[in-house]
Length: 258
Image 1: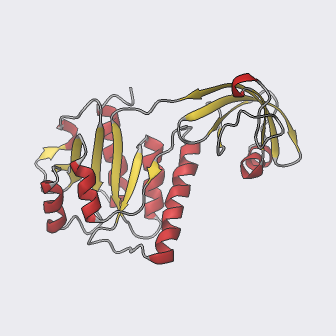
Image 2: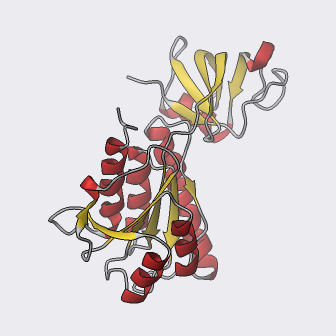
Image 3: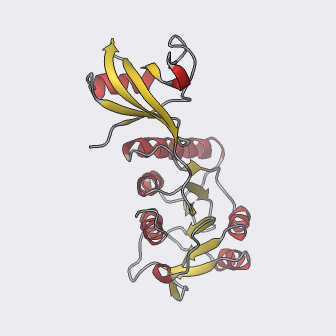
């Protein structure tokens, strides 16, 4: 089984008395994991001396550590053996996700994070029942970002997906215009996504519409921006699962799962 992952704000290279600091050269040596992550490691995971853990900032930088002991209920004492940087993978895959109803948005973020997408853009589509406005919108966005963080830890990622601010149709069109491969999942598509010609580098942007579908006006705007409509399969998936299924297909076809 792979080592559990814990998130730190930064992998400090200061002394051992600094917050989370280390006392060895190059950031290696003694490290204290405290706060909520330390409490989870000590009181929930009940990690024991000799076990291995990974610390990450969620942006690709990570450290492999060995547990040497605990202090109280929320301080895990570690020996950091190395600090490394995981390069970003190519092609970069961004999913534009129309806002689903209820908690299905968090489900979509969770599963897309687990399969390996690089960025998720919430989209306020014309036919979305859910509306992100004011404090409600900020709270919902915070839930999406927290879900990506937790799913990143669970799936042993050290580079978590970016969850952008909610985008308008105009902003999504601009994103598509700058992509190396731009796709919209839509029933009007005549080309299966499974047979599309994909780039080996650059950026793939995929749009997943709401339960009511992408409107003709939105599809026209996206087509003008350079995107093409594609079909995923013979069945109709819910918006909360379509992005994950399509991302998995793209990750496999681009060799990122090999």
